[in-house]
Amino acid sequence: MPWAIALAASAGSGTVQAQTRNPGYDRPGMGFSPVVLDAGAFTIEQGLPDVSEDRNGTSTTRLCSADTLLRLGLGGPLELQLGSTPWNRLAAPGGDLHGRGSSSLGLKFALPAGGSAWSWGLLGNVTFTDGSRAFRADRRQYALALEVNWQASARQSLGLYVADARAGGDSRTIAVSDSVSITPRLSAYLQVATLHPTHAQAGQLAGAGLAWMATPRLQLDAGFNHHLAGNASRWQANLGASYYFGN
Image (cartoon, rainbow, N blue to C red):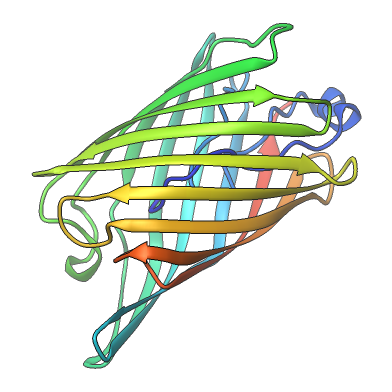
């Protein structure tokens, strides 16, 4: 994903999860759920799209991206992830640019939480340079992220997300989140993140969003992040849909 903040509020009710063995999704928010899919199960998580706006002096640019993430359970504590951004549109003062973003390959590791209120997971991935020139980095990026969640109560979960990415320089993200189940099918989350890139986009963001389990397999989500300090994006808006294929 292009942004990395913790815990998606994808809980749904215990009844919904029991019907489908659906452990939840990595959307919404900028991070991942510290749970892996069962062997052979997979999900499609699609941005519809995600939009961000940046300003440099008097110049304003707006990026629309339709991110796609495919997750496949490998069995045990492992999950394979394939990501891409097949459609991008950058609106800039010099004219609009269109193209495909780079693809990524990831591996998630997460042990079953059992009866513990704590859960954690690791996600490593590599982002390639196969996208259109305007929407890709000059070299491959390697990233490793840790997510730790605490189920504070039956309705509330707190998350900590730490990530380090390297592509000629270090880029680190530290974030905290708080998600609450409003109803058995509707969840809300708050999130705050600090970004430490080597170049642009350093700063702080705060955001909130909703995730609705429209069916036991289909989740719809919406979120919004706003600039707090530094050179982080002025704002980011996210719409998405995720579907679970499995038992």
